[in-house]
Length: 194
Image (tube, rainbow, N blue to C red; front, top):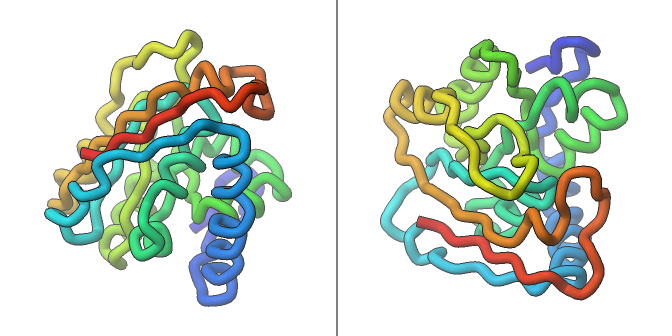
């Protein structure tokens, strides 16, 4: 897998990277989110009725969305989950490519109507990895949900895997576009699976 412009490999799925990612997500990311947010998770029991791999699809209003969705998952799911991330933003420079791939097990998705990410996503599903995708293709500018693009549905149909919808509420108010840290006061956010 390559990021495109910089050619940085995002294949950080081996045992060392997976162990580091688990420590970062469980020992750093989740505690920071719990400290900064009034964070609630609902519907995890819906995962009992599906077998991995699946495609998790969520609405996208904040840079909090991927960390919230990922760290809301039970560890057994989270360890075999990869996040589709905008190639033009998260994979534009080497340091951000490395950090995004390491912390979120991310792979690049083209937002300009191309289906290059489909090959990588399909390969991950074939290898038993579940995916987290945001079909709107970009964060909301006003907190309202935008139109879904067809990529997430296409890959789920092509690979015959279940789609698990995820509703993220309050993330826009907690950290809207232009903010790099959640607003003070422990804003309420919810992640609802199924």
